[in-house]
Image 1 (cartoon, rainbow, N blue to C red):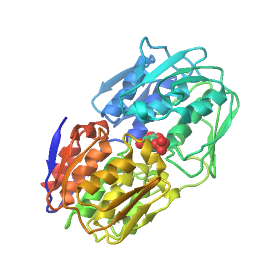
Image 2 (image 1 turned 180 degrees about the horizontal axis):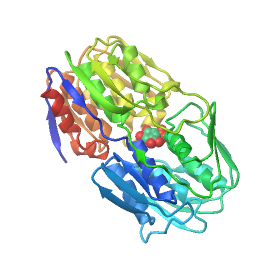
Image 3 (image 1 turned 45 degrees about the horizontal axis):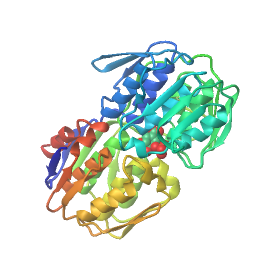
Image 4 (image 1 turned 180 degrees about the vertical axis):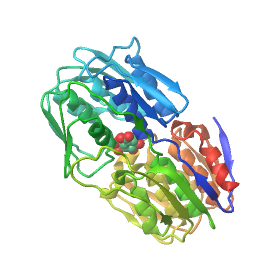
Length: 434
Ligand code: S3P
C-alpha cells in the first residue's frame, strides 16, 4: 500500500491535458472486438481498468496491438466471440463487468464466466441479469446477484426495458444485446445518463435513435467502426477543476476534455456554487443521436463558494463527481445537499459512507443519508489522514482535500488512482510548480 502526504498548496497554475476518457475507452475496446474490420483507437486510456478490458477482449479472440498512441483492435465479429479456458478477469472495472455481458448474451450456446477483485465481488449484476434473461440469455450469479457469474448466450429477442435506475452501464448492456436480438430493442431511462454507447453506435452506422427518454437500437449483421479518438475524461478533469476552485489564487487550464452534456453536470454544479469556469463548450441534449463526442478546453479560477442542492435528475450527469461536490461543500458557506444518489453506495466503495467518514476525519461536518449526504460548510478543512478503501476516486479526493486544507492530508492507498489516472501525482505536481 502506498501512503502519500499532500501538503497545502499556495496557488495552482498551469495547463493539464487530463487522461483519456475511461468510459469511452472501455466502449471502444468492446465495440472494436465486436467489429468486422480492424478499429484504430487513438488516445486509448492506459490505466488498470481499461487494460482489463483489452485483456478481456483478447481472451475472447480479439487481436490487440499497441503502438505508441495507437491501439488497434482486430475483432472477432458480432457472433464469433471465443470461449476462454478460464474466467474473464474484469479486475476493478464495473463498466467492463456490466457492458461485456450484453455482447456475450448473444453468443448462442456459449458460456462465459466473469469475476474480478474483492470490490467487484460486492457490486450487483442482477441489474443486467434481469433484462438479459428477458431477452433469452441465462445468467447464473453468486447469490443470484453478485460476481462471479456466468452468461450463457442464446438467440436473443428484442425487448422494451424500463430501467429501474438511471444507469448508463445497464442501458449500454441492453443496447449491445439489442444489436444481436431479433427486432428493435428499446431502453427507457428514468433520467438521461451518459450517452457514449449511443454515439459510438451511431458513428458505426447502427440505427440507434433517441426520442425523449426512449433509446432504440435495431438488429445488425455486422459492426463496422470508423477510427476513433478518445477525448480527455471529464471525471478525471473534475479533480483538476476542484483543485483550481479550492486553492486560493489558482488559475488552471484543462485542455482537451470531453464536454458531452451527459458528463458535465459537475461543471454546472460548480458554477452554481460560485466556482469560476471559463470557455466551456457544451453540446445540448436533444432527440436523435449525434455520432461524435464534443471536446473543449476550459479555465478554472478560485472563487468563494456557497452551498447548493443537487437534485436527483442531476445525479446521473455528475455521478462520479459527487465526492468532489461533498469536498467543495466543506469549503462553502451554508449547506450542500445531495439526494437521489443511492447508487453511490454501489460504486468501487460505498461512496456515501467512505466520503462522509473520510471528510469528517479531516475536520468536515457531513451527515450521511440513505441516498446522499448533507454537508455543513465550515469554510475549510483542517486535514489529517484518509484511506482510499481501494477506490481511485477516494484516493484522489483525499489528495485535492490536502492541497486545499490547513495542515495537509495523508492518503493511505494512493495507488488506487492507477485505475483511472496513472499520471495524477505528476499532473498535480506540474500545477504546484506552475
Ligand atoms: C459508467 C457509468 C456510471 C459510472 C461509471 C461509468 C459508464 O455507472 O458511475 O463510473 O461508463 O457507463 P452507472 O451506469 O452504474 O451509474
